[in-house]
Length: 363
Image: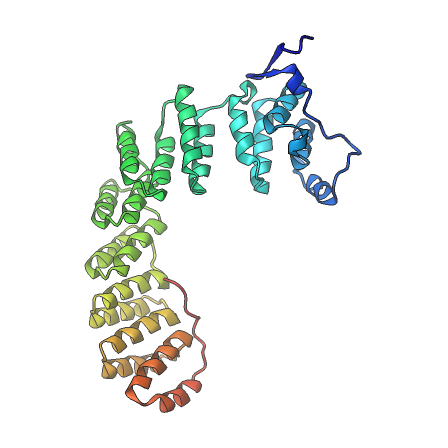
């Protein structure tokens, strides 16, 4: 055959001389114990042709040729179907294999893979999760060039991607394009845009979008409510935090101790210790046992305002209900009372407490 002749295989045109350059790893080759172990753990549900490719991937070396040559050689010799490609990709994903995305992108070019819009979206979403914006946009461009029209799932992935990258304008553009599709947006689509606004510090816009959802009886996931509540809490916007806390319950999300802690913190950051105490007691009345972080928040709030009497009343109430101090709240008390010159007496008293409460956790 002429050295310049070309052979078309599954959508790829590769020179025959190039194809011959790929060195297929054969049985009895110098395979390491680690590679043998990896091969032995391949899914038993895989067909022989898929296992054959997986073994080449496990033993892959650039000295044998490029990944594209390896895949094209396999496709030429085994005539795989879409199910075979998907089986290999599923196994690579399970193994978190470093060649996953390179192989997935190559698969898009193979006729036998029969690529559809969801295949592109999955790759774009995967790149977005790894903050690989350039690679995601390259896949997006390839998708456009192939004539695929964006759907809600793809546009949601774009909103999420641009949100994580801090590009609010492109996130908004993708969201508006999604609305123009004329389909009802789901909680994931809304949630991605709400998170984009939260990351951009635009909490009013995030809350307005949350209300738009609720007016259609669509409710965001717990993580979205918590993210917005945390954002309000950290800046001490107690009214905003209370609104989101109430909305969370209306959405059927049962508050836990961390969610309650965020509301308590919002009041304390804004200097409203009385309201924070009310929120703390409401939590207890709801049957949620306060952890040491919540107790420490209250102690710190009283200390900052030098409200010794209120702090002692608070601690006495806890002791009545057999709620004892943990490490963080104890250390805050020692630090506060040290300023008051009574640290020795306090340290003796605190050593008598059994530290039964859960240790401090991040809100």
